[in-house]
Every structure is written in structure tokens, then in C-alpha cells.
Image 1 (tube, one colour):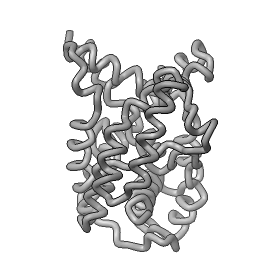
Image 2: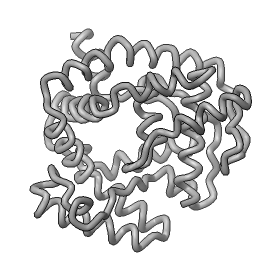
Image 3: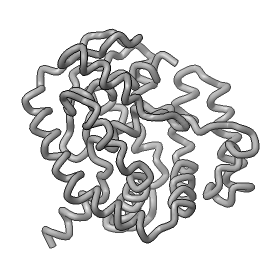
Length: 256
């Protein structure tokens, strides 16, 4: 029973640090900023390079964070990555992309509400339009009709960005076990995003909800295999690379 619980938690909380960092550091429709990240590494540990986000990095918990990074890296290498490879081998990419689209369509409340709270009515309207089009023409969101037909790319507004838009700074950087890179502000934002996630209200037991979340994350990670490895190879210090990629992109998202 204990082993079953541990495995389900691994599945539910994936992707771990590197996958989450890449997801955050890669805006939807964009690509991972490996050049920027490796450039920051060239400037020395803890540096954000000459990017527009030339702000101090508050990492007083670095010893703890590095330890968690090692643990998360181990989980990724020996649990997440092999599982995702097997899943990708037996599931055609077209189906995995459709599943990713379906789950993103379900996340509309998070993007819509946070766009409004950030004072972006145009973005909120776009999210609502995308949801209507994708749910109908896109068959419950499995096909991203809004992007394919109207060139309306999916948004990425979340509660952490909303807090940042109201002047709340990063706070201390934290590399959470399993969850991966974050900071004080985004950790509180995650609570708000969870409340806006329809999957949080699925009328089923914990195992069913956990299984759904796990499946979603395995599917998402299967579409990004190799990205974390590329980030590690391009960096002198993988820990600093993931941290800086996360902080750079979050600051950029808040400014936009």
C-alpha cells in the first residue's frame, strides 16, 4: 500500500523540477531559452546574464535547494523519463497532442480569471473565445481549432503572475521536492490556481483525481523529452541554469 501511494504521488506531481522549469521557461508556442540560460551561466553562478531581467537572485536556501534539485533529478531520470519514453513509444504523437490540448482547454478558468485580475480584458476575451471554439469546433478541446483557424495561441496567465502584476516580488527562491522550482510568490499563487482548476472538483476519490493528474503530466512530459537534457548539457551548473531560466521567464511573463 505504501509503495502504491508513493508511486501515485510521483505520477500526480510530475513533471518534476526540470520539466516544470522548461514548461514555465517555454511560453506556449515558443522554445526553451537554452542560449539565454547558457549565457547566464557564462557570467557566473547566480547570474541572470545581460537579460532584461537583471535583478538580484534571492537564494538563501541554496544548500537545501541544491539537495532537492539532486533528488528531483534522480526522480526524473529513473521514474519520470523512463515512464514517459514507454508512453511515447506506444502512443502516437497526434493523440498525445490532442490530450494536451484537452487538458489545456480545461484550464480556461485559471487563464480567464487571472487575465481579468491583471487588467487584460483583451486577453481574457481571447481565452473565452478560444474555449468556446475549441470546445465546439475542436470537439471538447482535443483539437486546437482557435489556433489553427484564427491564429489565437493559448495563454499562460496564472495567479503567480497576477500577484506579481500587483507589485509582489519574487521572494525567496525555493526548489520544492517533486514540484521543482518556485518562489514564495508563486507558491502562494499555486494555491489560487488549484482552486481555479476544474479537476480539483472532480466528484471522485483521491486515487481517481491523482490518476488523472498523473496521466496529464506523463502525457505532457512525453512531448518534451530531451529538452531537460539539452538544458543540462548547455549549462556549466544545471541547478543555476534551471533556477535562472525559471526566474527570467517568470519576470518576463509578469512584465508583459
